[in-house]
Structure formats: C-alpha cells, structure tokens
Image (cartoon, rainbow, N blue to C red):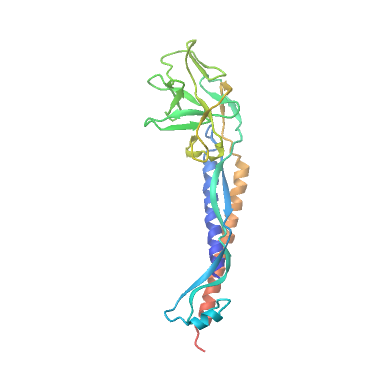
Length: 272
C-alpha cells in the first residue's frame, strides 16, 4: 500500500519540476535569443527488495531448512519480499536547438547567426558565457556589449568601437568602425549544444556533457535583425495544463492511499 504513496509522491515532484520549466520558458518568451528548455523524465529500473532480520538467536538447523528464506522468529539474514519500480523522476532539462523567428530592426549592431553557433560574451568578473542573442549596443567606454552590459568577445578580446559614427558587422563577423575593421566576432559551436546550461535569460555556459567550445567554421552572420525566443506559447500552455492535471491526479492518489492505510491500521489495531 505504501508503494502507491511513493509512486504518487514521485509523480507530484516530477510535475512540479515540469511546471517550473514551463514557467521559465513562458517568462522568457520575449527574450531575444532564448532557447526553450525541454524536461526529460526517466524511470529507474525495477529493484529487488528484501527484509533484514536481526534476531540474536540463530537456529542453524532451521536455517538449513528455510530454502525459500521465509520469515521465522529465530532467523537472521535477508529475506526477499519482492520487487518495486522506483517510478519516474525528472532526470534533466535539455535545450531546444530550433531557431527562433527573425525580427528585422535595421539596427546595424543587431546581428543574427544564420545557422549553428553562439556569440561569446564576458561579464565584469571575467566569466565567459555564450548566447544566441545578437542585440548589441555601445557602452560609455566605447565597447560593444549586450543589452545586459556583458562584453562581446572578438578575436583580440572585448570589441571596442570607440566614438565611431558608422558601425557595420559583416557576414563573417567582421566589425567595422567608420569603415575600418577593428575586430572579428567570436562565434563558436558545441558538440552537444542541447546540454548547455542556462545561467539567466539568454546566457548559457558550457557543461561536461556539451563539450568545450570550438570555432564555428564558415559561420554566416546577418546584421539588422534579431533572433527572437523559440518558445511556442501554445505548446507551453498545453504542457502547463497537462502538468497541472497530472499533479492533481497524483495528489488525489496519495490522499486515497493515505486514507486506505489509516483504515487498515485502525482495523488491525482493534481488539478482538
């Protein structure tokens, strides 16, 4: 009977995490370059359960007779009582690699990666991250930064455009300031980009599963546009409804199992 409680509770935890993933996706539906997360559920294999008896008195003759190791008051050891599945758990979340829709802005510092690849950015503490968002702007020091202030990495470090009045970004990532090339944007790829870890909005960081960054050979950039979030609102709303209903059903299952257990203990505990 307790197996039902364990199963129902496990399902509730899975659906709670599912709702967290969906909620985060919907919160970033307007974040440029954001890639939706997809929850991955896995089930543990069935495992053998046994009971451990630790009685101090051991009758060796009886032990030899207990071929199936059934319960006996003077038996010490493990007695198999069956198997149980450890149910489902939310194993991980992976990143959707589907490209988001393009919004044309005619802003020369807005850039879209046409194909695979990620821009390399760096925060004020020297931490390196990756992003699909090409919404760049100039800061007070004349450096090219993201809308959150992270520095855009070029072939020689942070890209500096100074006080240039004419800024252009070529198809190969070349950055021109007043007609002079000042840097080339770093664009990298990963062996398994689905395992990149979100650290906030559209920023990503590498993991052991994603592999190290590698230069994106032949990356093609298009200026004057932004890649929007690839979150599909209708699909996420459907997932939210499904998760809510599954959570309610699991909670009801746990409640029923708890009620049945209470009745059983009350019945067994009554004096004859």
